[in-house]
Length: 276
Image (cartoon, rainbow, N blue to C red):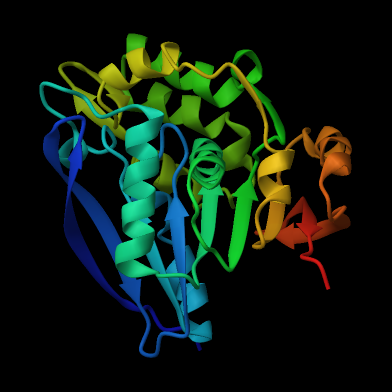
């Protein structure tokens, strides 16, 4: 039997860009904690993206910690000086790890959240037990990141009604791995009403910060090589084949596990094992 862990929402106050911000952190606490997972959502997501995960992790004694990056969900919107840059995101993530997880954390990053996770590992000495990257290419280019460009377009234009907003999200590969009865529920958590229409549940200024993102391409293989954490790369779309080729330069070559059934859909895992 899987029991839902206790849930609480904390406000972690941090200095970002010369101002103080309260970052919302959802903590799913099992009866007995043996290991912590910190889960970081994608570019248009929020902490609700991981609502289904804690119930499965609780039986293994896993505390699941899900921060909302600034600009996601209305309560996380920044004020006059939006802290929507990579440095601020990485600082939020490092602070959450330090406050809730310590040195034995497994960090799970989905899409954009995975990129932030790798950026943090590149820029700072953060000790992790494990790293799970979902749909994150090792050779990343801004021009080819479909999720970012879809998010920018949606933030700038919005949607005329709820149905079109949900349909937009359900067309993304991230949602095609979910069962048909669950996918709409998660899509609903990513939108909000705005005037007579609907928008993604993000501050519109996030689109500007994405367009001005200073890094245009990055090879994350070196980052994995410099980390002692066991890394698991999860791909749920057509990028799987190219991802295997991209991982060829990683110091500890990944070994593929194909046809892994996740919610009834095939997913490929690439597991990068640490040195013996």
